[in-house]
Length: 143
Image (spheres, rainbow, N blue to C red):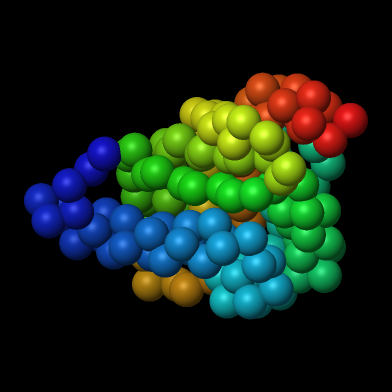
């Protein structure tokens, strides 16, 4: 992981924003998270899925996903910043709701956040994350 204390100011600011973004997202309560960090007309897209537009659709997407999760935790591994984007490598650790083993499922991913360092909300959010292991565990646990 990047060391925020040794990063350029823009990267350090992006890293701090990402920590806040993930802390709120990992709470599995999408309403305040989306309203705080996503622009009202934001477009979000996960690998292999159609894009989702706007607060209502993004909240519905996450409500559906979070209903099947006991927990989710993001660990930021690396951050790169341009004038209008943040690129993040991260590990996401999931536990499926009702999993008697509480098995942790890890996924490595890359996310592109459409926002400048001085902006507080993202205009677009594109996530490259292979969730097949999580989907498989959901099938095993939830049927």
